[in-house]
Length: 213
Ligand SMILES: N[C@@H](CCC(=O)N[C@@H](CS)C(=O)NCC(=O)O)C(=O)O
Image 1 (cartoon, rainbow, N blue to C red):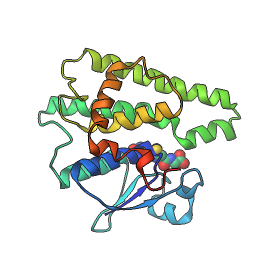
Image 2: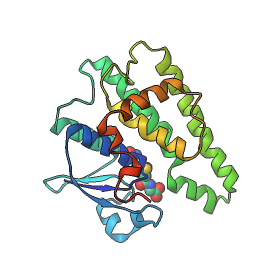
Image 3: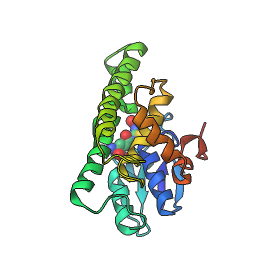
Image 4: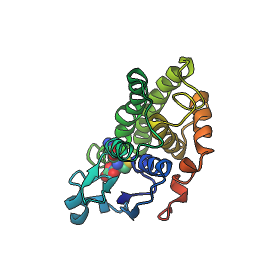
């Protein structure tokens, strides 16, 4: 397998965590997002969406979208499972993951920020306010949800890491990188610390990637 990755991409970070949890070590190619390599002809031929991650399977299939890639890895390498067994629990874990992956992360993507700045002409201060706003209201809702739900354990769901934690940790790293105060989210920070105590999470961190700058 080959992973098209970028150290700072939180969607790729999710896939790196899943690969580590599964004990898989694909080859890796860095796609430098700040240098717009994702919009190069070569990369667009692989993924017309111009985004990382992309995973090329052993059979040569190109998979895109982090949650679809993680679903593929979970189905092809079932141990350890990234979703609980009971349908209602799976729905809870997927709900948390999608809350982050669909409703927080896309609003603050590089191409969205570039559009705000370069096309709509917003100032840097307005762009940063946009970024902070969507992260704040997203994490606030997640904090309330996780803090009051007895299904939350050491991790987002019970005492083993799941897809929900795989989405949470990169999103918090992203918030910290943008100097957003995460202290109002104590449950999220506690879960993040439990995750980062595991090598699978710690080794996937942006700073530990070979292309880290
Ligand atoms: N929904 C996609 C999101 C992928 C994504 O947003 N990738 C970002 C990096 S985190 C990207 O490649 N951005 C390039 C750009 O905005 O130009 C997934 O989960 O894989």
